[in-house]
Image (cartoon, rainbow, N blue to C red; front, side, top):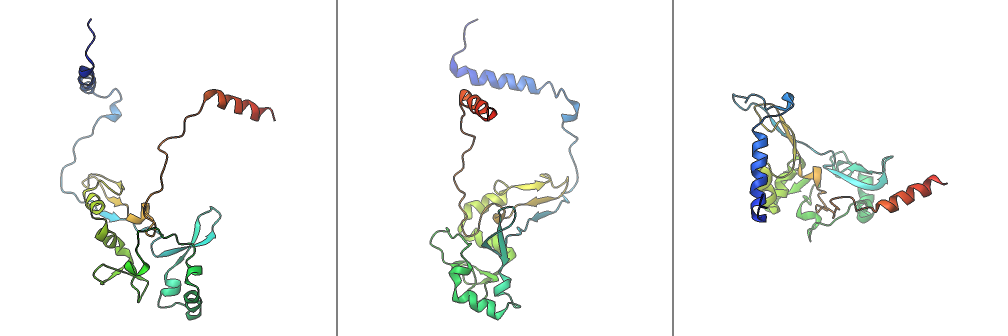
Length: 207
């Protein structure tokens, strides 16, 4: 039998895959269910991250995660005046647990300067903290567009709202508001030499 030219190999692979799919699943439990009819009655909820409106401090809990303090502690209507005065005398010390790497933006670019419990849009209007995604969308238009289309952000629950409810992630579920860029990650574990691993195992067993 003559060998196929390399340009025909992808086509041959596709034909083999299609022929395998027409045979159905060997496990009946994996067969597709009947289509769901009727209106989409499922609700879409956007998750509210517990870190919203919370400032990380240099202190850590037993798991090594930073201990947060609600902004209302100093900036809320029931804030202790003496605590706020001490924080204002040493703002860098109070906020030393905060990492700021968000372009050249200053605090007042996103936070209301008169009441830190609120955010501020680019036009100067006030925005409540739970609506922070509207603030993000002002500058991050492509990401917001993709989020609206379902290709950015992630979700849990039902993809088809005729089957159930859906919970969508908030921007702050994946991004730090003050340092939103993701750190560089290695996609896989680095390669390991088999002989080196065996030698390390033998050395550890000899002690």
